[in-house]
Structure formats: C-alpha cells, structure tokens
Amino acid sequence: MAFSVFLHRTDSIYDDVPSERYQFPKQYLSRAKLSEGDWIVYLEPSKVRDTKGYFAIARVQEIIPDPRNAEMFLAVIEPGTYLDFGDPVSFRDSEGLLERGLLNAEGNISGRAQAAVRPLSPEDFVRIVERGLGSDTDVLPRIDEAANDDGFREEQMPYKVTSPRERVTQLTKRAVRDRNFRKNVLRVYGSRCAITGLKLINGGGRAEVEAAHIKPVEFNGPDIVSNGIALTGTAHWMFDRGLVGLSDDLEVLVSRQANDADAINSMINKTGQLLAPERQADRPRFEFLSWHRENCFKH
Image (cartoon, rainbow, N blue to C red; front, side, top):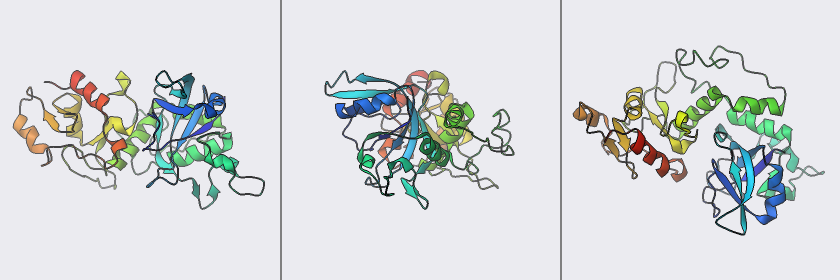
C-alpha cells in the first residue's frame, strides 16, 4: 500500500466519479495497484481553466477490471472516505512544488509529473493535506453548535499530528468532515441561501447559512458539494422535513401538505429556481435529488 496522486479533469473523457470510481487504462495498472487499500490525492491539471489544483482525498477500496470496457480498469473508492479539501491546493506555491517527489537530482520537474497515476511520498501527502484543510475560522459553527465536537471548538488548540498515518486517522472524524463540507458548500454558493437568495453575515463576519446534505449522512449520503446546498436555518428545516424539494431541473417545489404554502412561496427567490453554482460539477446530482423527492419530500 502507498499514497498516490490521481489526475482528474472535470471535463475528463474517462468515466470518473471521483467520490465513487476512477477509470484508467492498463498502462497505469501496476501503479494504481500500489494504492489499493490506501489513500489518494486528486489533482486537477494546471492546464485546466480555473483549476482546483489538489482538491480532494479518498481511499481506494480495490482495483478491478471495468465491467463496461474491457480495455479499462477502475479504482473503486471506499464509500464514505472521499473528502473535498476546504482549501484547494495549488500545484506550486511561493515555496515551490507541493510534490517534492517530482523533482529530479538537478531540482527540476521530472517526467513523472505527466503521469496520471503516480506514487506520493508520506511527507508530500501530509504537506498537501495540511494545506487542503487550511484555516476554518471563517466557517466554524457558532459555539452552541460546536458543543459536542470534541476537540474542535473555537477555543481548542489545534491538534498536533506526528505522522502521515495519524493524519489519515483524523480525516475520518465526523467533525472534520462536517467542517470541510460546510466550507466547500458555502464557497460554491457564495454564502447565499440557494432557495431564498438571502446572504446573511453575523457580527463576527461569518455566514449564517448552513450546509445541508440532500441525501443525509445517516442514509449514506456523501460529503461532496454535489450532495449539498447552502440554506438558511428555516429553509434547511423545511428541506429536511420535506416541505420543500427540488425537481431535476432545480425548480423549487412546495409540498401540498404544507399548512401555509403561500408563506413558503413568498420566501422562495423570484426565479423559483435553486440559485445553483456556476460549475456544473458543483450542482446537485440527479440521484441525490431523486432520493430526496422519493424519501423526504411530502407530495
């Protein structure tokens, strides 16, 4: 087992869903096999417009032949392990490359940088992950919301990591995942409620909107932006209780069982549509919207 980097483009020709699977040709099989049972870092190439750089981590459950394409293989991602970075990490910064292992003996970038699947040293893994988790002061929940987040209250001293494996253990904690999920959802929605259109900032300069899962975590909903919506507390409450929902084309639906449908309709932004992110990859995915309509929305 070993840490690895997997290159992924939003406009990829491959059948990738980063939180579920990564497709690759046979030439990368031996390298990809090294990652089986271990953690990978996803990187969007710098040639991609508005690249996200290193943007997520996940654990590879297994490597299998692609059942739909005899010439391809799949890295199957272990459910619940994918985590978008709250702070996407550039390929290089003022100190140089984040992947120091790409440098050759002369200190130049080697040809390994062109490989779509490549090994990643433990030191480089930790460096990238630490940058990706970044600072949470702008999105931390209010003190009352954090009361049960053992070790993650605002007044708590940061946890000191002593090894890459210890760092990996921290990435599986619910508090870390919730915090990073909130940061990513608020970023792509501009800290604005996607249903009402309200953008409320409290006295401390923090957004009052919440990051709502479309398919809840307790029903195996993933912590990915396309399973999230930024909502005010009231809109979040209505969404979770099925008083409002979303069609596949992101029209905001109001339940016929709502006891004051007129009041709910008056809260919806004037377009009647979800105020969705610009990037298609960040918008709610069909399967999550469908799950919410079938299991939560009161028809």
